[in-house]
Image (cartoon, rainbow, N blue to C red):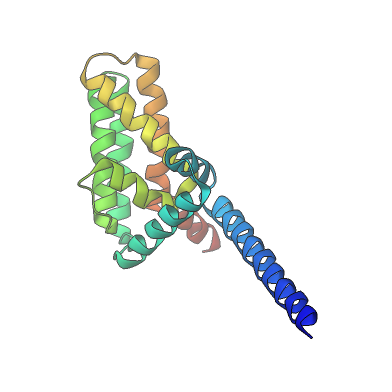
Length: 184
């Protein structure tokens, strides 16, 4: 009887361990799918997949508490026009245009309900809903900082503008507008 009980206990513990490992693997896979390269960045930054998972889940919980909202159509139109104007100015003054791009992305984020105080927190918040673009946002912001120090080339500024534009369009939800207009 004692041998049977020991065998059953060992089997239960083994099943529990296998179940826990399976759950951990599924959790990591879901986070990899949702966060893409940001998942790998978090693992690299923390040095531990479990810590990275906790960090990314904490981001999700934080963003769930924010009042992220779509832009009103008139705000979408106004911001889109500001972006077109900014792009036109790029040819004559790329240095000023990149400053404006950084500011305009921040304005759109703020209007949508994202806190915009600390850049690192901003990127963490953006990574929850826009994981594919957060690396581009970091790169564009870094180029904008180099630009302020006079260390960015015109090609760098062009690349930063393209990176800002991707996030800007996604935050503006221009794809949604285009689909609505096509469906009319």
